[in-house]
Length: 333
Image (tube, rainbow, N blue to C red; front, side, top):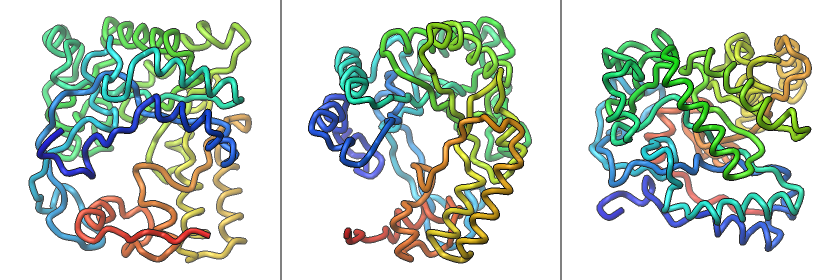
């Protein structure tokens, strides 16, 4: 998209490129057993106007920090529009199927990011059902009312229509949508985005639908959630036999970054903290996902190299640094 900064724009990555790297043995050499890729559904065209922090300092908050205007595209997969179409800038359905088949032939699973909380206001789903109770009204922005005050009803932005899963028709539509994606692609799981912002009734319904559709055939299907919080109880709240199989283990990630990244705690302290976290999860068989970094956090290599000025999990400040003082390249061994 012209007139959009390359850092927040499509850069050419696609299904065919991932398949080529699979065939070249790139992921085998890394010891990769699963790939997590962007939600492949058609995203909003053009761009949305937004902004980034107008300066860098530690402890910045989005609601109180000045903004420099910028344009952003749907390169990330989080602004779904036409739910019956594959994102053409990523490739075709046939190319996605070829990616999954190639991965399976090499013993690698494919998990899709599932953007279930909302659709872009350009979506035909929104224009057709805006007045049918499918979306939470009145519009209350999360950063205004508080992300944790009205988590399941607030809108992330004015252009991301928050789905009201208390409306049966909306819930049924999105369940059928998820089923169609699995049947069409052969994917092995979903990473459910922004779990704490989605009604729990949808999570349980999704687990039941995937159990009937996939797991009863003897094929595993992994539902892993994303709840960006260090609160063990909150993360655990969405895990169980009728909920998610597991979550990204953000509480453990915080300790890993302190122990291996900034080295502000010793390895014994890190180990003890993570063991205590795991003991706090009620479902001992839960498949929690341990990780050192993801797209919400500064790169682990930059943290470990001492290039991040504000420690760990100062996310908005790290965003500001990325715009104003981006970390340099990391030398590889």
